[in-house]
Amino acid sequence: MNITTMRKMLISTTVVSLAFAAPHTLAKELIFAIGAAQGSLQYKTAEKFANNANAALKSAGSDYSISLFGDGQLGKDKELMQKLKLGTVHLSQPSSIMAKVTPQFALFDMPFLVKDRAHLAKIESEVFWPSIAPTADKKGYKVLSMWENGFRHITNNVKPINTPADLKGIKLRTPNSTWRVSMFRNWGGNPTPMSFSEVFVALQTGVIDGQENPLTNIYAAKFNEVQKYLSLTNHVYSPSYLVAGKRTWDKIPADVQTIIKDSANAIKPWMYELSDSQEQELLGKLKKGGMQVNKASYQDFVDASKPIYEQFAKKVDGGKDMLDKVLSLAN
Image (cartoon, rainbow, N blue to C red; front, top):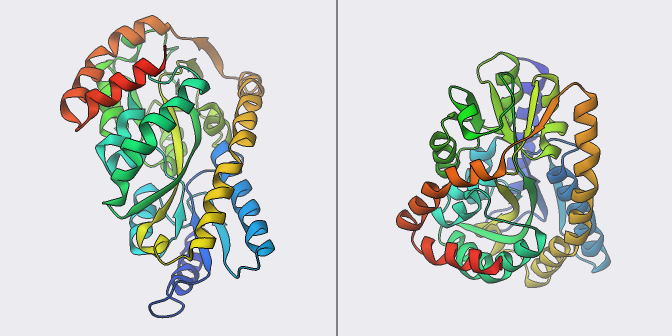
């Protein structure tokens, strides 16, 4: 047994013992487990939230606290969602995998849907909170805040991607999202769902040719070390979410719930500013690290995406109404 495996087992054992510290009660150390790599926007956001929430809890005289476990220490995406529901992990920061919880979350898998941050704010207030977030409650999850993951781009080791036709034959990792897989298949690629923590080795060994992620994730995960081409596509805007297991959330006192939610929402201006400042900085670093960068043909990808919208409108309950609303908010 290697050191990494032993460390994960020790952490998991400790977390389980904390989660079940007393029968019928909730341990007051809330376990916040995420898959994001240190240095990524998602990790920095989670860390900022945990620090601010802990300061606010301490100031209020609460004996609750939040402990952050990053880098997939307590499990991959699917495992963390299961642990949230069981209550052995109390908080997490899922992104695209939420579309596996309820199909309405897959709205954010629609390509070129979000135009800019002003448009995003309208989508959040007029579509996400009224129509999408409540669907998670019935599945055992409570969405507390919507955070940023970012606009996604394509990297690979075969060639620059300028149009959808360039994706033909390229084996590309995607999140475990039905609609993301469908999107790349429609574009001619060979999408391969895989947990984020497995991607680096899969790229390094040639199991896959490429992947798609925001720049912050590409840089933090060091994909530039195992990828040659970076094609700026901005094809999907991915939020991340602060999510609690409903089983956990319902046991937390109302005053602590308020502090957690307020802390999660208060960091959003800081998060967006950090995201903006990182974008150009990271692009420069990725170029300097040897990646060949090109800007893809926006209109070719948009034109190839129309069938995906049509499928979503037909197959997802309320899908057409949500799409119509989102598109109207862009005007």
